[in-house]
Every structure is written in structure tokens, then in C-alpha cells.
Length: 359
Ligand SMILES: *Cc1c(COP(=O)(O)O)cnc(C)c1O
Image 1 (cartoon, rainbow, N blue to C red):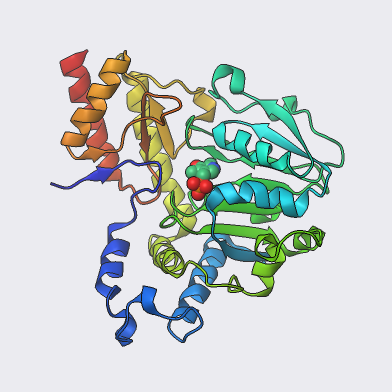
Image 2: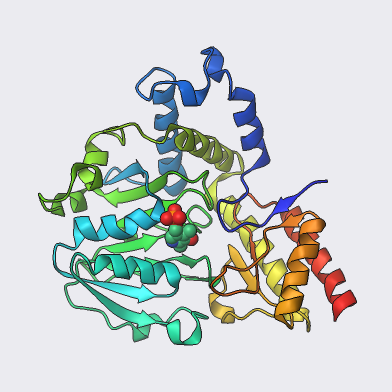
């Protein structure tokens, strides 16, 4: 049976990428060794990390003012690392649009003041607060946003701009490379790879190089952005397997025609699913229409019991991992770049039938 995996992360990867990794797994490019057995400083791995970086630069149109780093510890470590390097006892502004955004603010408090400029917590993070209502700190060390809220299912449709001179930092873990935007509007972008780019174990950090000069001398070597920039992410042993898969995934994104082409497909997939939800009197979306995520589609049936039944029966039908996050319940379909349109079609067909039988 073919399976469509709607997991929020680690999430499905393009089939051709998995097949290529399998084919090369035991004997990488006739080296006689697998990719995870080869030295990170040897002649086989060096072109792999170089290709991963070059692909990311090309796909996102990143200028030389920015460094692309591969760092372990996931997005959660970036919550601390951003503040550790860039806050220095000052004040940073946070837009609290979900659980991950709140965690980022919590870590920042260890290194300075985290001002919650706006929050949608009181309405269970069902929308993104309008930018006109943000209570920003003049001269803030930075402004932090979460571009896509994986758990609540909201997303900035237009990415905001920070006031002049204030670096904009974005946690893009669940929508990086899903749509076109201008990297020059940001001071720093970070993303755990396991949603849209590859396996867990590596985070991609894109940082304007001058910002790395702000780090205090007391920050440990492995937690300084400058260490990764100056050593090409190879101060120590990098997560070689994750970077290898990242290179394959970004090769694949290029074959798909780049981010603009992928964005079109993503928009069509999400539009189809939301349009079905809107037409249904059985399923409902709890999210403000204008802020709906094109990556994580959150929905509910009329009851918790039916939610559970839906998830169970969908799994049996080959549509897996549709359970909502444990903090919010309900159902969630994550439809990242690697989810083919046929997967969304199959999901809608199944939802129609489930509503007919149980409605
Ligand atoms: C998954 C996720 C995280 C946490 O990522 P880890 O790599 O597990 O630390 C942070 N932010 C967002 C938006 C996420 O989707």
C-alpha cells in the first residue's frame, strides 16, 4: 500500500531523495564506504557540504553579506543561541504567535529583556496579531518572529519588515524554502531541517555576517555564530548525514524549478484543502482565514471522539500522522514541499467519505 505521511516533523521527504540515499548508502561514489563512514574533511564529504550551501544560496538568492551555517541542536538551540549572541543584556521584541515563539522568548530572558510586542495566546493562537498593533521597543536588539506556526496552523502571509536598524530574526523551521521572499529583509533566519529540508539533527542558520561581531567574549566557542562562519561549519564534526540529505533535497528543489515553482504547487495544494474544509459542514478549521498556514493545515471534526476515529481510520487507509499536536488536539495535515498534490487529493477523498459515513 502506498502511504502519504502527513507528519509535522520529522516529515516526509521526496521519494527520489530517499531512493538515491539508499542507492548510495553503502558505497558513496565508489569510495567503497558509506557517506556516514567518511571523514568530514575528506575528498568525498567536502563537495557535499559545499553543494548543500551553494544550493541553499542559489534557491534563496542569498548574497555574500550572509553566511549559511549548519548547526546541531535543532531550532530549540537557536532560541538560546540567537539571544546569547545578539541580546547582550538589551531588549528584544517577540511576536508571540504560538508555542515555539513563546519558547524563543523564554530563552531570551536568560540573556536580557524579552518584550512581548504582541500575542494571540488569549485566543489560542488562532491568528497572527496585526502589525499595526505591535508594541515595538525603540532601538531593540532585534525583532523575533515565527514565520509559520506549526502547531496552531497560522502563517504570516506577508513577512513583516523590522524598523530601520533593527535586525529581523525569523524561526522559519516549518516554512523555509516553501515560498519566495527577500533574505535581505532579515538579520538572521533559522530552521530545523526536519520539517521541510531533511532529517533532524541539523539546523540551517542564515546570518548577516556583521551581526556575528556582536557576540560577547564570554559566549562559549561552540555557541558563537562566528565559530561556524569562520570554519565553514566544520570547527568540529558536523552532522554529515543530515547535510548530505540536505544537499539531495535541495538538488531536488532545483529540479522542481526552484522555490517560485514550488510555491505555486504549495499554494494550489493548500487552496484545495482549505476550500474543501470551507465547503464541509462536518470538518472545520479553527484558524483565522487570512492567516491560514499553507504548510500545516489544522482542522477538527464535530467531536474529540470523531477526531480520534478519523486519525485511526485514515492511518489504516495509508494516510498517516494526521493527529493534531498534543497541546491542541484535533487533526493536522502537514503538507510541506515533499507532499505531492496526489497526497492532498487522497486526503480530501478520504475526508469526504468519512464525513458521509459519520456526519
Ligand atoms: C519544530 C519546530 C521547532 C523545534 O524544532 P527542534 O528542531 O525540535 O528544536 C521550533 N520552531 C518551529 C516553528 C518548529 O516547527
